[in-house]
Amino acid sequence: MRKLKLQVQTTVDGYMGGPNGEMDWMTVPWTDDMNSYVEALMKSVDTIVLGRKLAEGFIPAWESGPEGEDQASIDKMNQTPKVVFSHSLTESPWKNATVVAGDLTEIVNELKARPGGDVMVAGGGTLVRGLIAEGLIDELHLFVNPAAIGTGMPVFPSLGANQDLRLVGARSFECGITALHLEPVRS
Amino acid sequence: MRKIIESTFMTLDGVIDSPEQWGSPYWDDEHSGYAEGLMAGVDALLLGRVTYEGFAAAWPAMEESGVDGAAAMNALPKYVASRTLKEATWNATIIDGDVATEVARLKEQPGGDILKYGTGELDVTLLEHGLVDEYHLWVFPVFAGSGQRIFDGFATTHLQLVRTTPFASGIVVHVYEPKR
Image (cartoon, rainbow over all chains, first blue to last red; front, side):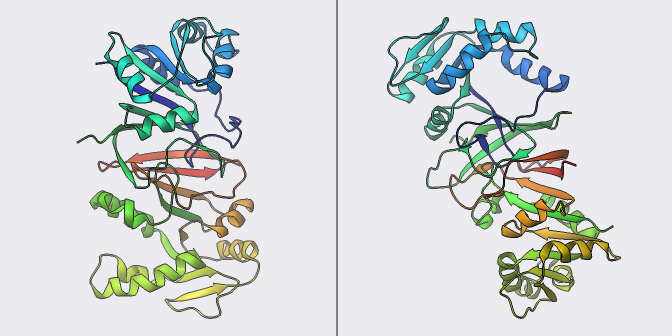
């Protein structure tokens, strides 16, 4: 079955964005060791899911062919079909994207049951916390940037109890970012 | 010059309180080996008042029950930053003046490195004055969802990654220096 992989940039203190989604703490540019790691992660991915708020920035940003990104990454991001979770949109204003609403578990399980490669979750906060809370993510790839911001948008939901994960691997890159690869502990 | 080395246990989501509730499944030989390595070059501890009170209440009893390293911990000189504490036990000296000045003075004195446990109010002051030389953040493979968070109240702070050390248990120690 297809895997649902979370791939998210975080701060040392576990935030994926500032209180208003600020991303000014991110380390750029990435060094080649990290570029190759991310490229390898993306290889099996043929669908990207994201929340509506993030999609509004993410999709146009990649369509404009951002500076500092190589053409292969830009093409990969633009050509990969996207699924956007939204309660407010009825149809997609973007190319190559479909809009979905409804029960998170049902939608994700239906997506996973289809034939195809892996599905990458790009964010944002509401969707990520919802997916983690429902135990729907198969692989968590946290890219811990060397910065602390004190407060912001947490990656992890509050479930009223501590939740253990299994560390699969950890790798540091020359640019100072550390990738933590984790999996849920499923009984 | 003596270094100040901070060592803190935290969850993936930056929670630092009640480590006994989420940390204990991961306390193994690799864990105690790293902790002992940190202690090896150190001849004093620096603590905030809250951490001091917790430690001073717990460690003497741990020595009595024969916990490894407890005797060494109890014997170390300690410095406690507090505006309210009038007297201290557990081989501790109270820093009641300007913390940044006093800590900078401590670092100038001859001696080994100084280990700091716990994070809180004191860290904001130390960071603002660039007084901590190394942060050893032990990231446990667990999320808490709520609780007191490391770096709470900090403005955006960029750090320099020195190295990471993953343990078989799933803990990854991230070592950072202040970005200079």
